Image (tube, rainbow, N blue to C red; front, top):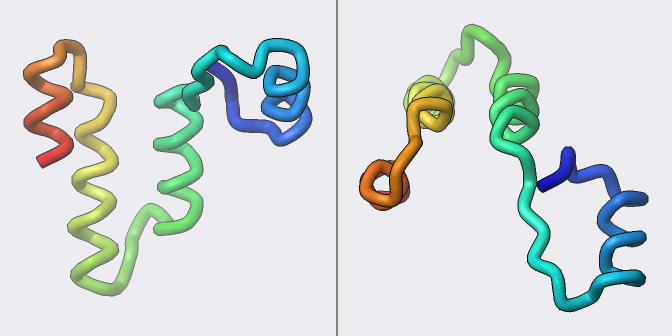
Amino acid sequence: TCDGHRAILKAIRKVLPQVIVQRCVVHVVRQCRTWLTQHPQSFAAVEFLSIVNELHGVKTLQQSSAWLL
């Protein structure tokens, strides 16, 4: 798990190409909030922000499946 910085991803791929890399949930949510702002104007952006905000509550595989749907 990493923050998604390109240098880190490049180094991991070079040294350990078989390792699966995933992005930290906190960094995903933070970037989405930056892109959408705290008070988005469009309906789609408001809806997407509410979905993103639910991501922190996902703790189990069942909750993960429900969130993905």
